[in-house]
Length: 484
Ligand code: FRU
Image 1 (cartoon, protein in one colour):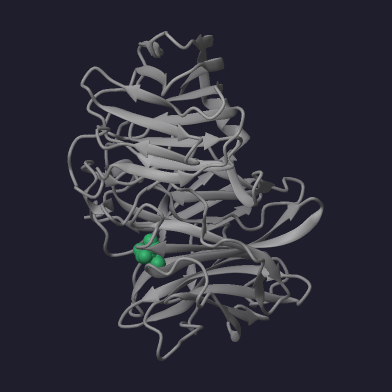
Image 2 (cartoon, rainbow, N blue to C red):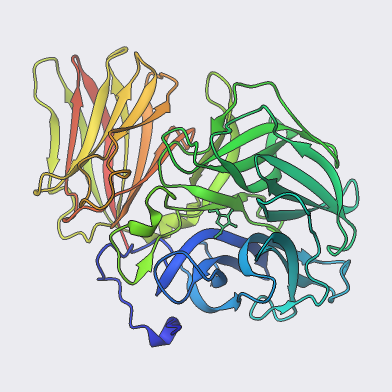
């Protein structure tokens, strides 16, 4: 039985139900799909099983938002058919009616996953409310490739064609089309480059500006084979000429987020030039344990919507990601915990009960300056002995997250010890941590370094503790905002 929207009496008091991250009301969710902006509305479709909270029967669920923060539930738009289940894909606005479905039609391009994987399209003439599948589906077939999926399409103006990035086992194949119906192969990328510990999925090719110049970024999700096991998203930086993606020489693989819980994320299409942002959202889970997370009526949340930028981190270019500024509208009371210094002899800096009466949804910000190359840590703790700890190790140039005691036990893969990220040692670090009832999203130095990790504590984290291996530690503007 399909229980969605009104029928299922969901509420935010439900155990581990995030307060400000998008979750399906009832059922299972994985990848974000078909993100597209139209007439003041951000559409987010998603891999959805309306029949239960485990993967299967893939549909496209649907939600919309005017601010990328508050999401309105909509009925699902695509259900399995004789070609198969509806796997991941994208959506575009066909301003010039190239496909003949109508001027300004919203066209979804997705994988039909049956006995084989093929690409299909569907169009909406009512702004994304309902879709009609094209009678000529599938529009792209390959007789030999088994893992052949997740089409992400954009209009490439210089070559006057639609360009599709498609995951083809452990490479990305690019296809071109004048009408979204007939596709020709352009090139293939990725053999021998980047991470190859698992199958390549959910690509996205898009431009970003760096110092006034256009660079092309290619996202490739990979599962397994992430830097800390399981699923993760790698990227390449380079150029695209309408046919071939040529990567810059860099030390690949590079990872968008070193945490365990940001997968299959891609960017919004048709965002107006007046906005100008490259907007991203990811699935906040990992195939290592996604089907077993300790929720009942629903499974998984999305990350917060983020903005992507190309920045130099002191060693090389990185794709930085930060929460969209609209997220600040969720800030309710702010508690200024202030400035603090730990001297050589003093104990850890501890803020107990730092946000009285919170529901587990808050944001922490501060600037921290360690003494020279000393390592330091901060941890969230509760009275049950549960904790998640962040260790900044300048000597070894790593930022490690220890969530081994962060959660109720449910899967051995979840409670691995250290989740590591390479870190460029700096004099000071600006830290922003978004906490919700079952997630933590860490942004260091304006998103140069990101770690998104789910947590399932049995009680809200309400103590914040800073420590150093030795020496001093200076904290500035430690602030906590209650969110929502
Ligand atoms: C990524 C993925 C995609 C596929 C979808 C199926 O998480 O495996 O490759 O289209 O999930 O739900």
